[in-house]
Image 1 (tube, helix red, strand yellow):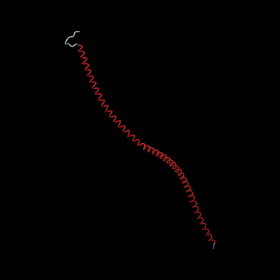
Image 2: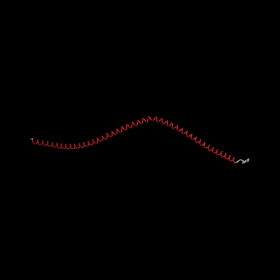
Image 3: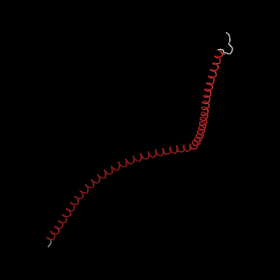
Amino acid sequence: MTERSGVTPVWALIVAAVIVIGIILTGYLMVQTQQRLETAQGERVQANARVSELEKTVADLKSQLETANTESGELKPQLDESKAAVSSLEDQVAGLKSDLEKSNTELEDAKSRLAAMQSELASAGEAADTVNAQLDALQTKLDEASSEIERLKSELEQAKSAESP
């Protein structure tokens, strides 16, 4: 092939086009990479801010946990005392229930004895009424007998006075 002077060979144009396309692609890739880098840096800043927030939250939670543990340690003796008091009260309640059941049993026994006594009293009242009726009848007979005796004494005295002149 002969070269013409002053004319750029085709292969030089192709090489130049390839170089230009390579430069454009490289520029495009650089812009894309730059954008990704900026996005990644923004995300990194946000992630660092979030990590900072989380570290602060963790520190607050640790502080709250320490406070809660301290309060728990302070309250444990009170809780133990309360449990002991509750146990003692439960024992007292059990004793009172037992006493109440015993008292209820005694009350039922007393009611039963009272009912029996009331029945005996009613029977005794009926017997007393019968005896009173009998006494009234005897008193009536006694009064009649006394009246008869007085009448007979009177007749006897009249007879004696009629015989004695």
